[in-house]
Amino acid sequence: MKFKNDLIYGQNAENAFLERFPHLTKTDGRTGDFITPSGKILELKSDRHDPRIFRNLIMERYSRMGVDGGPWQAKSHNCELFVYDFPKYGRTYVFDVNKLVEELEEIVKINELPLFTIDNGAHVTHYYKIKINYLTDIDLGIEAIC
Image (cartoon, rainbow, N blue to C red; front, side, top):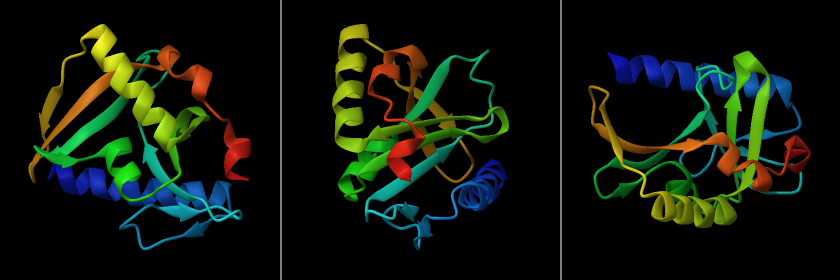
């Protein structure tokens, strides 16, 4: 049930994102979620928690053990941008996928971050909790999707 609820949340978040940024073109979702006017493929991650209280970004590492998820999957799908959106709180982070993956690998290694696990009913997802302030210097801003 949790997987289905998360899927519905994600679909609704994509539709709301498109309303906020109507100049984007929605894709079939298999290798990215949107295309920018300049032709860049964008992967969207929407989150429900309040980033002012829970000051982490949840970066999915594996959608199933051994299968890339999150920014790593976006990179393997040739996405150029990874957008982490908090729609309820009006905060959106835009990252160059290659730079983001590079930074995440370094952050995980330097800080010896553990890989967390959640069983969402359909499969087990593995993720890192990344402090937002670790990535603010590579945030391109929403101008990058315009």
